[in-house]
Length: 249
Image 1 (tube, one colour):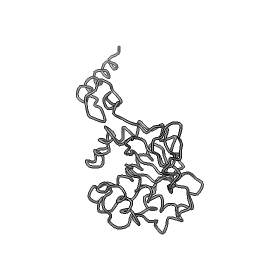
Image 2: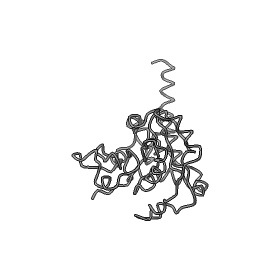
Image 3: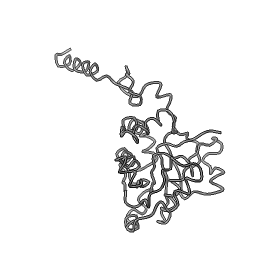
Image 4: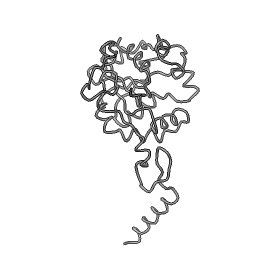
């Protein structure tokens, strides 16, 4: 072995000793040089491929792609709804670390792990619209989480983002503080289109899909109300969230 090869090996050994590889999800030391630890891997729950295409809830394989009973009874404004993960375990921890502490290492790892699926779902010709965040909350957190998620997806897929087409109106109660029907009532007249939206979307016609993006879906009220407003544009609208809550009954 040459001296240069020995030097590189020594430097790599020193690097591993000083900066050992840790699990991107729980920060536990790992012998492996990539990926996450076995415990975290077991905790990750990806959304099943068998879902209602309209609302995104998991379905019995024989019933997929739906529509499910709820969507038959009351169709949603969006054409399709997609999610990457269930909001539980390390996925929940990753989202909370990102939203409450500004730490996105775990979130970025989960997005990178989902790269093949994201590239299959969202094309470079598509347009991503983040669900608008109340201004007072954005000032408090210092980050527009849906817009940040859009940027991360765009970095992977290469698609466009527009943060100006869909806007928020007024200061509504935080959705996480409400339950059931109160969430839907809270969002009435919460969104509107900017006056320039028609001009912006006219140049986008027939180029790709228009996605309304949110970080977490709980009851679906936020995405539903945002997509209802987007229906006024006469474009087919698609909905996406990084994770969704789900309790199998």
